[in-house]
Image (tube, one colour):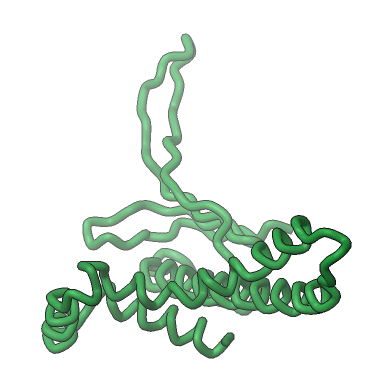
Length: 178
């Protein structure tokens, strides 16, 4: 099932930028009344969503089963279902984090930095990304000038720079969080 999670993730990424042939196939599938107009991505997720519901279903059955009935196999079945659901969630999160880091890495321009550190590394994840406005204040406390800076907070590094017209981030500095 972990293999399916990985395949599902990559198929969802492919559906975000479909080829012309893929668009034709998806359009034909949408016209089929059996799909009820649902997008292909929803069919990819159904098995994963179902797997996540099994531990909850088994837990609910255990709570509602009286002592007269024998739920002997239920606790034995619930633990592996929880483990598999957690393993699938972890796999999908790992794949998503990797894709996010690849996207960030491709959007950074290190031309202003000598010997930049590699951004895409095993175990490094995005914590927060966004614009921060750096303000210069006058002696009276009024804002004289404001400059937007893009900040990227990773698990072990902070990167800041300026957005360019090419939708890249011209990196001013990388600082390790240690």
